[in-house]
Structures are given as C-alpha cells and as structure tokens.
Image (cartoon, rainbow, N blue to C red; front, top):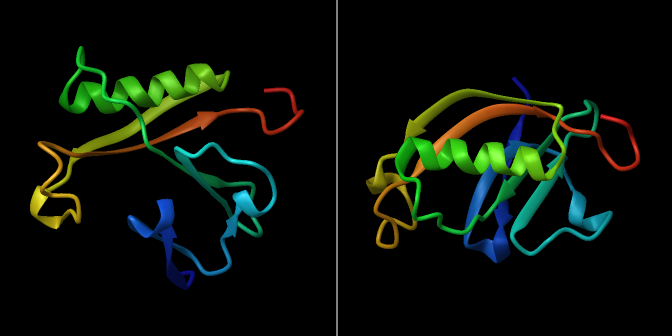
Amino acid sequence: MEPTQDYPLFGGAFSATLPVGAIDVSDLRPIPDNQEVFCHRVTDQSLIVELLELQAHVRGEAAARYHFEDVGGVQGARAVHVEAVQPLLLENLALRGCCEEAWFLSGKQQVAKGNQQP
C-alpha cells in the first residue's frame, strides 16, 4: 500500500489522508475558495473536496447524490456513477456540534480536464 500523510483542508478546518507527494493543484492554478483539489503524481487521478450550499429540498442520502450529480452536470461530465453512499457517525466528526447528519459518497465522474474533449 502506498504511504500516506495528512493534508490540511480549508485553512486547517479539517484534513484528508492522501498519498505522500499528492500535488495541491492550487499551487498550479486558481481554485475556487469552496474547493480543495489534489492530484496523484503518477496516475491521471484527482480528488476534489468541495463545500456545498445546503439544499433544503433534499436530505440525507438523497442530498449527497443530488450534490454529486449536480457537480457532474456543472462540470459537463460524460458519465456520473455513484458507487456507495454511507452515513458518517457524528461522534467521529470534528464538526459534530455543527451538523445534524453527515454523509460520505464515493463515485466516479468522467470529466474533461483543461482543454481536453470529454
């Protein structure tokens, strides 16, 4: 298994465990304030962590799917596939006093990078 390290996100509000040497894309190009973007040094894979606005018309698992599919649509994704959606235990969250619920969605989106065609 590849060695990992913790990377601070959003000014240290929380962190993510990523492969050692993950590239912080904000060092290469501008990234919106509500995103953290990392890419792997060898593969063509990237990880985007995005803070999204509450949508009162969807809750729970449906909210996680809504946001994932919405981001895919905005990015012009050719394919959007949800692999799993799981609730997170609030007692395990650093933000536990701020949330009523938290969800983890794992999925894939096929999106063109930069000037590439999808």
